[in-house]
Length: 295
Image 1 (cartoon, rainbow, N blue to C red):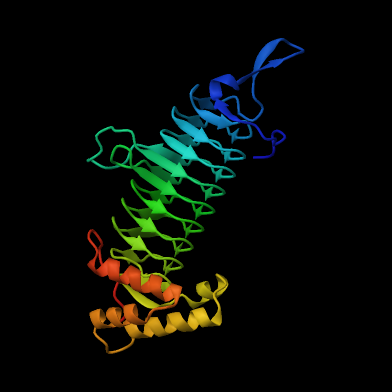
Image 2: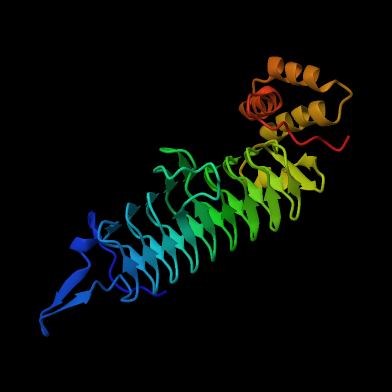
């Protein structure tokens, strides 16, 4: 939708106090020009004065939306939900509804979304299951059309999730990961930083950081070299990760012994992250274990 008004700094105030403006010529109350007249907004919703809301959208109680966020037409945002600044939410998205979880008992749980995200058409983001718990999305993420983010998920920063990806509950995706389209991710899975998941894969275990994973059953195929280079990693960074990857996935060293060796020798921060992720995935409580390599 086009620009409907000048974007100027203004405080977040209850919608009931900013909804109606007075037309000096007619003496009649009219809707704020940033809000389409067919939108339905709860009087207690907290919208920054620069928020735009499109036609037929519904904003519920206990919703807070920050500056310069654009809500497209036919969007539903239920609460408790906090949405930061500069986000774009496209038509048909549904955010903050109750989790699709039979364990949910009606407690007050949250969706919290950071800044400068793009949430495309018909994305669904559910609140957490337990009272006080949060489904959390960070900053500068792109969630493409028809993606589903279930209860208690955590998506860090600069993640791209392609069309028709279904995330089950309690999934954690680290920053700068790339999830290709038309795939499902099992509950409690962790996906590591700068990992690349191939389209139509079955992801039932943890995806190690910096790697490419694809297939059904899925396997670690290689380092995500193109993604690592594009992220600005130096030649020294890449060399250190290549050595670590070869030790874990290409050498004849038994897995546990290779992890211990990597832990003793890992001075490089990326290698430390790689080793820690695999260690916690393999032996940490509540983790599903890492997706294996080709061998």
